[in-house]
Length: 100
Image 1 (cartoon, one colour):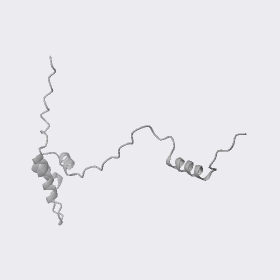
Image 2 (tube, helix red, strand yellow):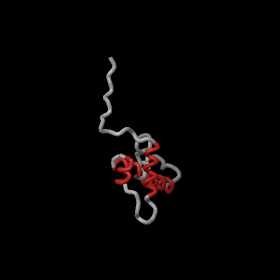
Image 3 (cartoon, helix red, strand yellow):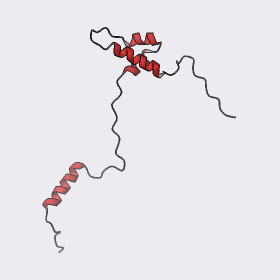
Image 4 (cartoon, one colour):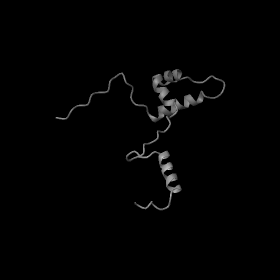
């Protein structure tokens, strides 16, 4: 017999629609103009009947992109060691010393 999903808690509001998200961003941008009489996150929360935290997440700037790690194993030589090795190889004799 398949498992039944739990019903959503009644305390949570349904997910934001694109319309609500746009309305919230519009209210925030309307208040950004000069004069200092902007619409605060608290006022937007009262108008949209959403929490201040939700409004804050909507109007906050997106986080900066994260740098992806390079695939593969880590390098055995550092960049500095590689430069030193190349420099020493280019300065040394062009032929290997003769074995004794």
